[in-house]
Image 1 (spheres, protein in one colour):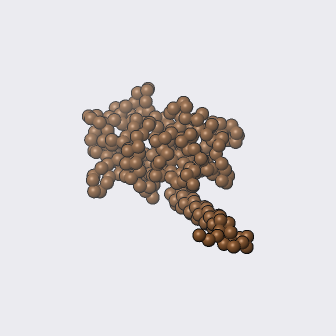
Image 2 (spheres, rainbow, N blue to C red):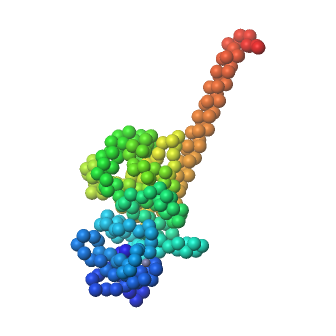
Image 3 (cartoon, protein in one colour):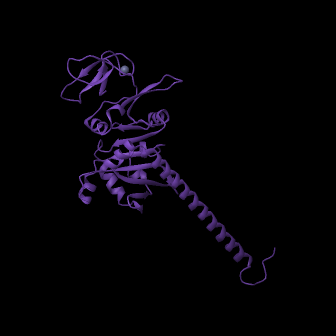
Length: 269
Ligand SMILES: [Zn+2]
């Protein structure tokens, strides 16, 4: 954990201090070595949040882009008493989770149900093969409009554990390639939306700054929900169009079969 309580104040780990875990109220001790980022650890036993993963610089860099009071928000389920720490929890209740390690499907869906209004930011640099695979897959992205793509084979681009996520998943590949192409210092995130159009995935590019700003301004949830509902509507219209076209074609074929269009005598049984 980045923060623990001393006299009810949130403080970062520093040698010599002893503090209280804001979740379980047990004592925590500072770990300020060379190997890992400085953090608080429970002095006895395990971390009280079973979903907690050891933090890396990548986690800390992301967290620090948001207001301190939103970082490490403790959430308790009123009915079950289950308690977890959200990496970021905004004043509007949006949770952003930064995921570096592999996550199994069960835990991913449990976290999505628990937090409800959630977006993931996934460290796409953990496995060396992921970024080259993404760049190769990106060659077959079809542009819908600037920065928004339809992806026919999302499994060729993204790690499989995220494909069926029920919430937006933003992949952070530390995308140096697009930085180079766009002459930009900002790398792009690729947001995989939890929706399909005719089985194609929908992916949007967004800069880190734009994402952070939209979360801070409170627009992220409303914008993404609106975007997803627009996509569902487009998909519905396309299906209706396809069904309508299919009906016309079937009707034409039927008329042709019956000889109705040629002024000939209709077929009769
Ligand atoms: Zn605790």
